[in-house]
Length: 236
Length: 236
DNA sequence: GTGGTCAAGTGGTCAGACCAGTAAAATTCC
DNA sequence: GGAATTTTACTGGTCTGACCACTTGACCAC
Image 1: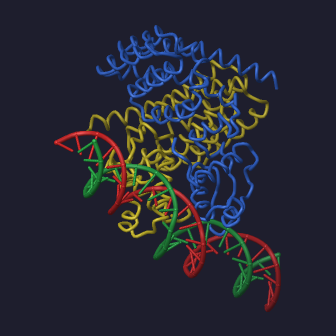
Image 2: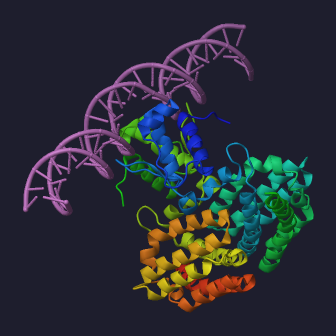
Image 3: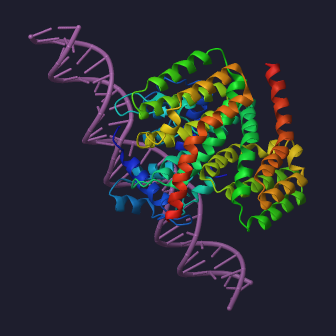
């Protein structure tokens, strides 16, 4: 992984304070000159970091006025998901995790349905190859990676730019935690036959069957995670 | 609307070339110094624009190496949707529009279901107020705006950060074209009784009924748009 | 064919100067 | 005394020029 630039450091530092609530919506940030002084970096570096935060919807920068923190829930996009799922101190946010797995259970069948509707002849060998990789994987992490590629194919087959961009966002949140969650995903990625079954009905063009097969594939792991998250909720 | 900064101008200009395909994945951009010279701006301004493009997943900036264009379909997120929907020259991309309306028809019921599951007592008066605004709106554009706020409430009630961030992205794509599409949305926003009906079953906690009511609300406009987009497809 | 060196490209960082916008305080006017 | 206007001091915006650090390709030696 390439090392962080100075603006990257400033960006992550301020982002962490906003995601954690230490900097709350409505708060004013110190001025650019003041931040540069406090953080020991140059003003252009601070400016770049703030502009990137503004692009993520986290701050409102006004010439002549104070830079204020915005409510990322109102303005932010899915690009924030990785940082909401795993806090900068490494803490895993199970509420975000719960939201992701339940949304996945709802989106997966949608993607499968569209893929069945818009499948192309090339899809069958591609799916066969990736199901083969799921079956031949050396461990659960490798299997989980192959599963990501499987869904990537389905998203392509769905021929929907919205689902493509949406899936990119969910994948960006998942990939950093894939290694630590890989073993937990075994409830799903070990079910090679379900992957093959879903592939079969998609290739055959059965939209409703694709929905059901996707639900059948995604439900076990989803319920397992939801059980874990419910226990965490009760532990609070 | 606040005026554009120099980095904003550079960002939009390069973004336009990438979204239009004029700059294709794999292409190398001119160096920062060269771009600054070509565009008649400073190097820090170019750098800031490139860093923002990198944040959007559009370019890969490497110290010592050329800055290359990435495939936004592989890396990009929903934040790109507004620029994919309406090209910089103002052209409306109906393929993106089609993708949005069909995704909307799939996501709306999901959100309604979760809202019915997790509704709170405060939701009823809030929904009543916004349905009132839909009913009392002076024109279709105002009615469409109120409808956006209606769904905003449902997303809050769904208590899902993923749907919240996802909805923010869809809303960001929709709001710039709301005024021009407002009259077309009349098939939906004029159905005040359907908004009230959906609100009723959500407040009552009927998840399945909420799904059906959301589908009933969203389907007419969706089918109208899909018909229009199909005609555009056949015209090509 | 491989490995090492070097030059010339690239991006990264910064200080300092100056421009432009905004908001609050101070002053003036009625 | 209050409203309107002006001034001031903050804020961000932009740029130049210098220098640092990384990467790549050419060239040379073996």
